[in-house]
Length: 222
Image (cartoon, rainbow, N blue to C red):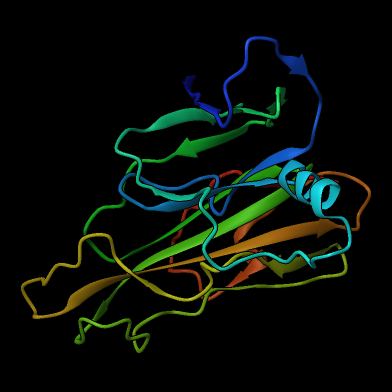
């Protein structure tokens, strides 16, 4: 497993005081594909605490639009990567963030297809439905996008996640021999299990799957 570790020194000092503080790393997609950009951000509270301690109630604090610790990352290699932990030092105090693991999958082929996968996050099964589809437009035209639907039974409930629910342009938009453009769509769902036990999804749990689609093993955790 590869690690991405960075140390940012905001103020230098000779004597360091180690202090535990909540500094969280957030990734908008923990299972991207090669060349599929993800957004990584660091959220921390110690900066707010420093400002409040110094300024008291003289100012109100709110989140600004330009957050300097947000970056867009584009993976080139497959595998499991760990982002963090990051070390910050301010006012002679060292703060350490948590870490996040991401799994980079191989890039999708430049042809139409449906791809279903899953991963576990916070003891929940996250279902990922990806599609590559044709369109006569080089914009995000959804005319030929098949709406693959999960059948919600009493045994589980799904909840859409993130900003990736809307169709996105394929990483490399290409024109095939018929004059169509390829586009990419991704939907992610958090699945809540009501059965009290783990169970495996089957093709019957979906609507509009392609004929003879081979569903990988996906277990919804209890």
